[in-house]
Length: 433
Image 1 (cartoon, rainbow, N blue to C red):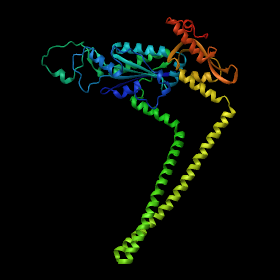
Image 2: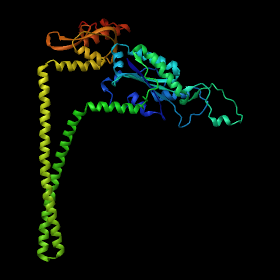
Image 3: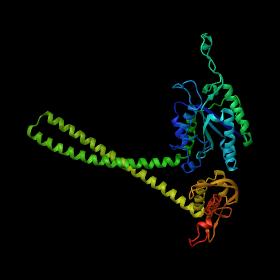
């Protein structure tokens, strides 16, 4: 049984950096750009509001606050809601992700006030499905007085103790944070998620630190490929550097030779210690040039060795890939079908099951790039099967038909549902649909 994950973090200023991450105005390195279209905002913004930053400001302006908001006051709290990686993928594969999202929204509204949750974005383009919710901490309880204020006996005009206030501290007291974890885990228990150990040494890390660690793990997986590419890049750099140094060396040698000839002429005419000193300096420079030539020859040898090693590794990889394709002739098509599964929105678990060749039942929504929309199904099956008339070719079939034709059928159903008769649209076009 996995764990429910709930993390609260105070923001600073307008929190524009996190808004850019949540709304994907800046693409993070740990996100798959081919799945970003699956992300969605779960809360409808008020009229005239189009993003998270505006939603925060709209709530502050319409909350009926009586006190002026100070420059350093916390205006919003970030809330991350998710679960253990394997359990979240299981929830997605079982078609329960929408139910999980709805239960999260209900818990947020009951816990903090529905009007205070101004944004909740579901991210499906990272390794674990999760929700970024934004809470504007408006409270109506009486403000806790400081000890210094309790000692002051001056009489002031009494204010309404239940008037709305902006207070992140009231929302994030130690006792309330513990209560949030308890009630959230209770809500998530139906999905097989449990609360972390109460009082354990585990501590929250910031969202930025979470992504840094996640990115570091991802980088380790790519290390071998990156090392090879870096080696190739360095080899090309060294080659360019050597060519440049060889050109400079030729110029220096010509310059030194001209200087030596000139000094010989001057020395023969005038003689003198100064001319001899300059001649000695020229000879020293020539010696340095000879050393540099030798160094260049050594560098060229190293470069040639590195190039040969790179070519050897590249040839080996190509040969291995060719051998794999030869032993498994349908691998190219399976890789193509795997990419198609990800593009239409199948989870990683469902994709693996489909690639085994078995018929896999599913429900949910699939995305069509042709029609730029999602099509829902309550019960369908996906299977890889030979293409009719081409037994050596494979295709992805949904409910027994090619997935492209399945999308067309779904699009026609959609048109009929809004009053467009497909048969009427094609009258006089000289073809049957």
